[in-house]
Image 1 (cartoon, rainbow, N blue to C red):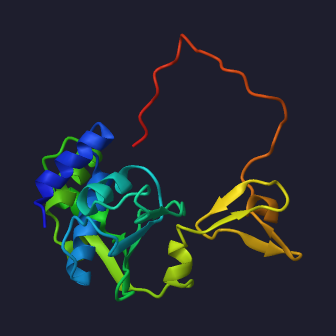
Image 2: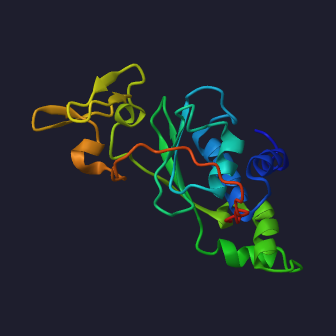
Image 3: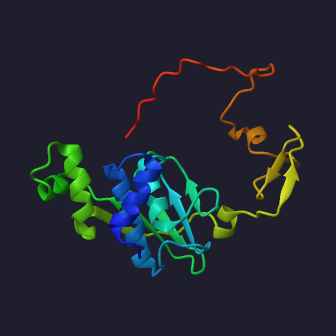
Length: 210
């Protein structure tokens, strides 16, 4: 296992700064490695992570595990929770980890000289005992691991929109092979017209969301 300090340095580079949720993500991943008996970071596909939020915590998880969305070893299901399920793809053992209800208040105790609550969490989360910081539970997946991972070599063509579908994500509706958008799971609405390039010269500075 890499030292926590090295992991947090890597996460901070990715995230442009270090924040409390990155520490939660990193230590959450290290705990999962211990419980599942997996050495971290990984260069194979032995570990699959399903994160329940995007943002800060995920950068900590990536830095600790080496798992990525592009490597198909990290999935994001945005439930708005700083939580993640870690799956050993060989044994199919799965554990879900989430911060304890007392994690914030205990962080304040761990860092009594912090200037504010944010700094107390930043400092406290790094040194708190894992049993105080997290709740960990064994879970069973409600879909087969093979279905979640998909089939990278499989391709299909939607019989409604004509777009290609990869990884076995097509569905059958009224005897037609269709994509999930055409099956009613769409997240966008086509407005029509062909988009034209627009070059903006006066972009406002983006505000970092922690």
